[in-house]
Length: 274
Length: 165
Image (cartoon, rainbow over all chains, first blue to last red; front, top):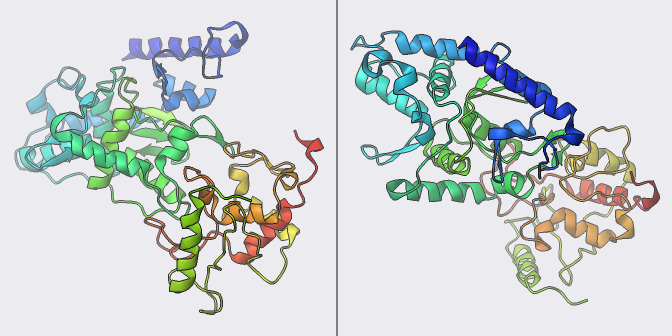
């Protein structure tokens, strides 16, 4: 952990160095003159590349990244027995680092039993209800955010790789339709900001590509960790559109579509954003 | 002036709206109706004012700044130096009155998608055909008819491009 943190710190310094010597630094075709390393894959740019230097530094340093408080909570949950079965996650899955490496890169998945998609949060709650005999965690609770971030963090640095073949395909189609449909009083679709105008300014905010590889994310505006579905709801309300519920089919389908857009970018959980 | 092909159904739909009345509001049909109907002429302009009271440029300047109303600054740069961080998602509006007249600006405010169906710009005086409008905003246009006219009056003052940053 400490070695990892030091290594990340060193990477952060390197990134800062790249900014300072921008004039002579490695060329980049996004107008920033910063070599983004793993945060830019082809034309795909993580939200990291749209964040300010201070925000990026906060993400790069595990001791500064406030989300690590949630990771500790998640690690505790992993080890703590709960429910009628008297079991902890670790009792079935073993060491998280081994059991969970790469798992989050594949979610949401198609769940045959339910005949629809299942994201990480839903998988965790499925385990709690079906395997542990425990009450599901509430959406956006510290517990669900903590264990979700912990699970995803075990895949940190691995490329997102959701499948949209086979039974997942129609749900991806629905997510795509959501992404492209105008909604709300402002009559805008996701694609208007995050595809057509990514990189331009809305007042003091830079529109990003809306890549989702860093969720749950510690958002400075929220002053807490938050889920992707919270971000969806915020985006919808910004354009004065009625949001959907956390964990709704609509948002999980949209999650598959947006995660597919992020295929190839590394998992950054827990990221820090403005 | 010749209109582009796809504007014909727009004109028809405006006519339908007039005929159906209650859907989008007909002049004088309902007192206090939030939307004043408009007619697109030749596919490029809405020449008739939405109100009898002329627009007030000083009020219009307030509406373009106000984040709860026009919020035009979120996407467009304008000669409003006291406000920081003008958006750059849409074109800058310095000298816009040298480019468009009132009727052309009116169409761009009330139904920009009549000109460009892919436009990101909201229709500021429209309530029909919207999907899942947030509770509390249903049936309400972003700007009232008078506010649209105020904004047009303000934009018509933006004639001098020499001070463009």
